[in-house]
Image (cartoon, rainbow, N blue to C red; front, side, top):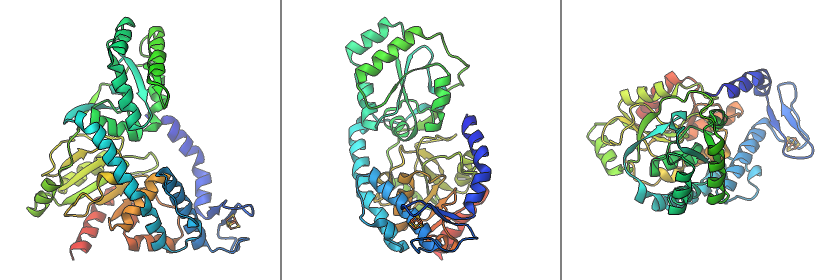
Length: 394
Ligand code: SF4
């Protein structure tokens, strides 16, 4: 599914090995600078640990920017506790945003099965891939249901309109409105190659996107390749923390694991196997993000896997979980995900990342002391969770 991505990763592998030997900073006109084992001084005089913290702070600044909040002089904060605290500035924004989207879309939500993957495209329908915000996609769905739009779609000879989405909004719209989620952003090339995507709706007018889609549909000659069978997965369940806590108190579940951002091509965890493993060990796995798993369910009083929409801290933080959820972060190389992850660490959630954050060993140790560790071997993740759980209970 992600052949082009993996080709690129292989091409870059040798460069990455070199980069891994040192830290790189490009924060001012005096750089770029690196500590690669053969150098020990940089013009501004910072140490390798400080460079690692500076790089981390730059990511946090970017992440806070996504939530329209900021912290002045953050790239000169060399103290881990202060940096983690700075990351939490996005938490309230995430919570109010999650609540706002939930208020808007939950009247449409019900437990149902939705297609995940390219099998969610329908050759006989006008397919529009919507990549705007959850609110923007909702507006598009509503527009295509107006009598005017319905008439135009019928005139075009299409069997309805099929709005699909991907990535973060795709995860939320599949959850709230039951539209197909075709994967994460990396799948878009493959989706276009099917020839079945009639338009991509971003942040423009809904009418213009539909017109473009109808025009493309009229000239379409059928799928360019065989589409996979739709894989149906359950989603749409309201998070029932009371039921979860009761199940935990009665010993029906070992605990709660949240998958924060559901998959990453640079993470070597075998996600399906990991989720199965967690469920077999008695965990309730709450999945946030654009991936759905075999055996997904709406039951929250037993071990299982439940999809709950997009990866926002507001989906889980402050909901009153009796067992603090363990948070698994398959890939962090997105400033928003990294900043959210560090905010969760500050709030006491044990976090395991599947991709190493480039830090010096001593900074990595400081982060581990705060509860954020990296485990590259997916087969060891359950064991690491058990260790953390024993530590917590002991
Ligand atoms: S290490 Fe110091 S001198 Fe070099 S780019 Fe970074 S901030 Fe500038």
